[in-house]
Length: 489
Image 1 (cartoon, rainbow, N blue to C red):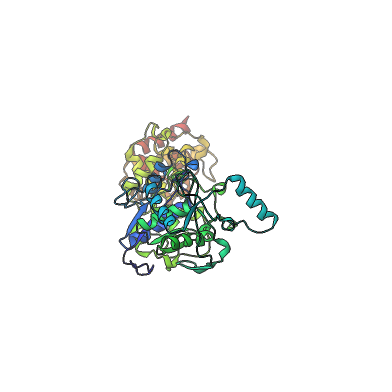
Image 2 (cartoon, helix red, strand yellow):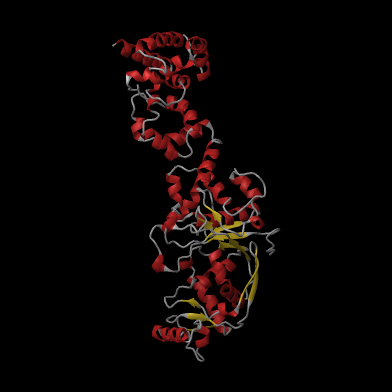
């Protein structure tokens, strides 16, 4: 198997979360990079569930994380629902496999049962503290450990205490001294393997060629390598990802800093393709000026050699901008569907609401929003009610800058009504044409301002031609007549 990251013949990657709660952007980006690298090389992407710490497991997490990945179209080739030839992609269902490898290490003299009680271990730690030296279990390795029967923890016997040097596809050559090595627990007294042991066996069994994970694991790498060596496994390609930082770049983004459940972004109306695009560019640079990518384009462009070493900031404004760019790529039908889902029921219950008017409103509305929550907020504030109900307004709002009396407005509205009654309502532009010559005679503000007000009831709204096109000729004439009659009253 060729493990050269720049020219692999067979790439297998994995995403291996623990079911301990929601997935935030850092975890999702790890999954995304692993997915993109596998797809780029027509390889295999595996979803593996690391659930050997049952005390931390949160009910419903497995279903939630699968839903999160599916929303982003990060689809796995093998996983909990499709284990393939792996037996299972859930660690708690693979205990016999870990036991087999554990017994192999025991037979080679590279693992042993831990005979000490917690009190004895505490005394060793306390002694090290008094002597001002780090506690290392290997300093207390028993000469004649008992046979391992599963009731005691099983520990690795570090055979070669040395300085480790290894290569990382992102960080280059890294190294750590022998002080990082110890006789680690491989299998706990409850029968479950530790992360250190299980993930290495699973990666080997599943043929994983590239291991992508956060930089917090760098300090543990020598421990991992000692287990690889004890098992006789070839190292995969290690790909350390940069942290996602807060916007001020002062620290890693965490839950306290706004790292939300990824599905909260779905609830806010972010497009999955925008979220994928955004996350891909946090810590990876395509080497070009291109910023907006489809999934297919990302698969072609993605290269682990262009992953950054330094942390990259989570920029919400950039995410909003990207969402808008992806919205602009949608078809008119897709945009109508997007807006319809975002509209509150209060808008849909307005007396003149119809899908026909909504279709006409959507292009104007899309110009003013970045995400679906903007639609909801604006609709709840009544900004677009004019499209679906006759507006109410103070009559003096019809006055333009130099008007001193509503009687000055009345003949202009009467003329506008006459012109619009004979206008072509094919588009906003044809409606504008029907009024333009008259507007140049009396002044554009003098006619367009009161027309805007009587059609929308607002000082700020789309132009009166667009509103007239949205609501149609009959309703347009009706609203002008209403204003004309109010002045008369």
